[in-house]
Each structure stands twice: as C-alpha cells, then as structure tokens.
Length: 215
Ligand SMILES: Cc1cc2nc3c(=O)[nH]c(=O)nc-3n(C[C@H](O)[C@H](O)[C@H](O)COP(=O)(O)O)c2cc1C
Image (cartoon, rainbow, N blue to C red; front, side, top):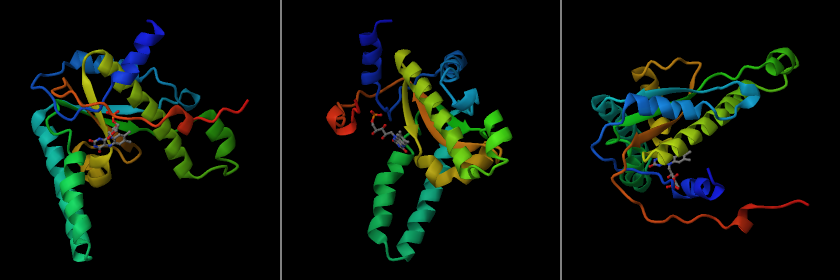
C-alpha cells in the first residue's frame, strides 16, 4: 500500500457514536482481533484480551448499568452541595459515557498482567518497581492493540468509538457482569458497527505545538 493511502486511513478515522441497524459478522470481529494482535508489546508480552459483546440486550444492560452508576455519583454530588456539577455529569457526561448504546458490538479491551523474564529475574528480586508500574505497562500495550483494531475497522468500512466513560463509572459492574477475572484490568471499551453518521472535521494541534526536534 502507498504511504499516502495509509495516511488517508489514519486521517479519516473518526469516533462514531451512531450506528446503522446492520450486524457485524463474527468473522469481521475475528479479523479485527487478528489485526490487533500484531501490535507491538513490551517484550512481546501481548498483554491484551478482548471480549466482544454482540448481543443487543446485553449491550443495553451495560448501558443501563452505566447510567445507574452515573446517577449514584450525581446523587452523591448533589448531597454534597454540588448540584451544578451533578447536572453537568448527567447531561453532558452521561450521553458521552453511553454513546455505545446502539452499536451492534461492544469490545471490552482488557490488559492482562505484564510478565517477562526481565521482571521475574531482575526487576522483582531487586524491587525495581511497584505493581502499579507493571499494570501501566500492560495497559500501554493493550492501547496499541486497540488502536490497530480501530484502524483496521475503519479500513474495512466499519466505525468505532474508543470509550473509557463506562469503565470509569461502572468498572465493577462490568467486571461482574462479564466475569472478568481480577487479574485483568479493563482498559477501555470500543463500540463497533457500520456508521450512521459522518461527523464534521475535528481540529488537531499544530505539529509545531507538539513536536520538539533535538538535532
Ligand atoms: C482514552 C479515550 C477515552 C475516550 N472516552 C470516550 C467516551 O467515554 N465517550 C465517547 O463518546 N468518546 C470517547 N473517546 C473518544 C474521543 O472523544 C475522541 O477520540 C476525540 O474526541 C477525538 O475525536 P476522533 O476520535 O473522532 O478523532 C475517548 C477516546 C480516548 C482516546
């Protein structure tokens, strides 16, 4: 593939929050996971797993769980005299955190524990870093795999939206509902489906604002 074609795929991917009433096949999902697993990972640890929820009722149930949690947080803020913030949470963050609701597929992206020979033979014996560092290491690789998945989906004509909103709000509920083992972190969810929306252009920071070249 030509570089310009690839760049066009990168530049035209958008987060989509409205989906056509058209199913996505198991084969397509498997194909996307095939692309995801070729992402780089620290010492090829491949600290990722994916749960693809492809049942509309179950996706609605996850949406309901997310709203329940959000309402609980809003009620607590209200009792603490933070009524304005509670309203904003419900009106602005609520729809943002549940934008997966009409997607035919919801992919839950997990990070599995980071293990490596370095960690086992060197880092752990000398107490080089604490558990949080290794959790972060797992999440980094899981993010790269998720990006592969989203770009591959876009190249196939599918749309995605990466989302941490439902994870921030309803992580425990999601874990129980999908029987996610304690050792796995829930990194993000990705809504997946055929797009029913063409969002307008979204700006990006200028290159000079984000790049420093050291010669
Ligand atoms: C870590 C992360 C978390 C995000 N969480 C949400 C979310 O909870 N809800 C949502 O609708 N979009 C979410 N997004 C999508 C962003 O809003 C979106 O990527 C950003 O506005 C840029 O738009 P684009 O993806 O169309 O280029 C998230 C994106 C990232 C990378």
